[in-house]
Length: 608
Ligand code: GDP
Image 1: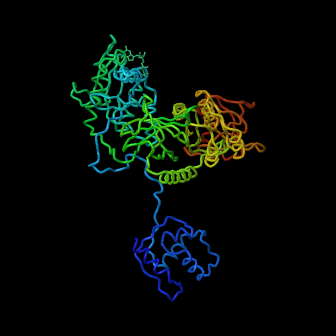
Image 2 (image 1 turned 90 degrees about the vertical axis):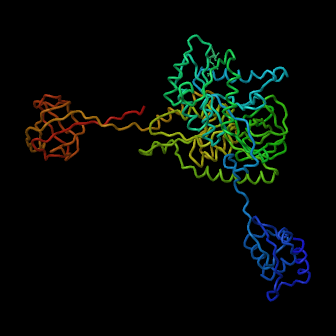
Image 3 (image 1 turned 90 degrees about the horizontal axis):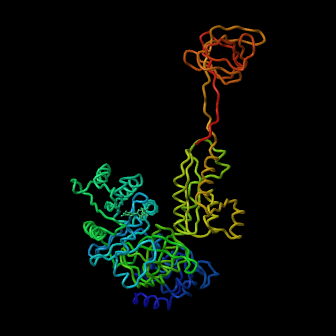
């Protein structure tokens, strides 16, 4: 490099860049990433700026100055003139933030603690179990440490750590997974011994299986006199969860979360299972992981609980979380103790971040602000592109106008806490109205922003705010963009409004209802009236003005309506089965004996 530089300098001292003079060859490879100023280029390729200006002057680009920005084509031309090899260096546009996509050298992998989630039917004791496990850490209490709810905590058992996610239930678990975050290794499926397998037990089993996580069945409430463990075994065997005692391979633990019985055995079992899973990570790389929960704190601003899934997170690192970047200035654990670093499987709270991320967002740490900024910028651009490419949903009016097909309601959801956003989101996704599909194209903790309005306008979405209010400026933007903002502070009221809209959006279905049939036994022709069919009503009834079709030999030959209906020469509004009548058909006289006249109506039926 130094040699090359010298060469350039030497050459450039007496250089005069006329076409007939051959520039000096060199082996320098100049990597560039886009536009550059002339001065910067001169520095980078070690050619005096004046030489470049002379060259450009000869190319009749008289106005060149040192600050002029040179585009890619000109940079290429200058480089090739000075015989400098060049190649364009692609900036890593969207560094992969997904921990499972990152490969590590086997030699660098080390054992990491398991990440455990608790699931099961309501009231089967999930919360009590999570608390019992947390409280079983006697040493913490002796040290006067008070745990804060941060969405996850770690426990040390026999010198090894276990990470528990403390939001029980499969909904939160699956919501995270839906966002691409697979953070869990082991699911504890809690089943109350006195209640057995219940609907949400089955859901939890299926969610855990779908996520391919290891299941440990925890039979809880064994202290209850009505506990029936055999029944639980029996019921779970239907879901392929068979205990070793019965010849299966599922691990079962029996506990009383309330009495704090069997907790130590459960923790030891988790460690055994985790050893079998050979959970490993590379602590020597920069951290990667997922957001467990995040919120807007009145005092501390945006904060997030991050679970480091691979690598080590350090104070001073630059983080890209979702599409934003920030510096890790302070990191605390569940006891609010400051940490300087967090190893794999460690949950930490990071405060003072620019934006409230979403649960399930991935994060990645970088050494420099520059790297983090570039990656965040690239991610913002690509998510904007994605947002703009969202298949256009439809406005309410368009929904009314469109026929058939599944109608989409695109929704942008903003709420005050991660919990409320997740709760509203899952309530919305549970709404089922045939023919209408809810797409939550964006759900995030935080106030409604102008960029939400843009997104809503670009993708024909409605904005729903839960416990948040837009500023006057945002409202004005919404007016300009004709974007609807709906504000609520009761989940039920919000979902009811959307459900009603969904039902309202549906055009009532047109359902045909056959009234009855008559057989043409005779025909008469009257000069003014046309052909009169003398019918015998064989089924149901026929009504004057009802729609009808003429069926001959099983084939509909004409569709029209009943113009007149007479019973014994008197006009009748309807004639029932077993009676004879005279019928004329609107615009149709070619009636034959033996034809069937089928009367029907079209009814509008509201969708349920
Ligand atoms: P969750 O809805 O699954 O989180 O259930 P909770 O942890 O809130 O427990 C529901 C009820 O069951 C509470 O009244 C608990 O006190 C009770 N409970 C939980 N574990 C046990 C237990 O081991 N034995 C008994 N007898 N009651 C329990």
